[in-house]
Length: 42
Image 1 (cartoon, helix red, strand yellow):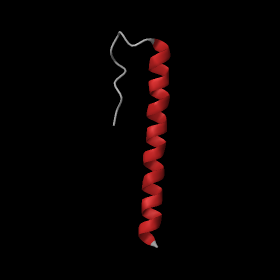
Image 2 (cartoon, helix red, strand yellow; image 1 turned 180 degrees about the horizontal axis):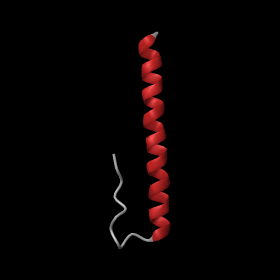
Image 3 (cartoon, helix red, strand yellow; image 1 turned 30 degrees about the vertical axis):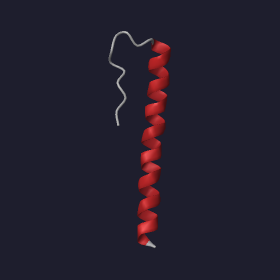
Image 4 (cartoon, one colour; image 1 turned 120 degrees about the vertical axis):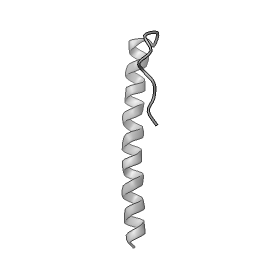
């Protein structure tokens, strides 16, 4: 899921928080994938 931050009306501080959230979501997806792969191989 990609969060939308392109709109010009989004304040810069909110945009930074959204980008941080996007990074966390990406890390969570990677972790989920790693755990699923590990569990599937057991």
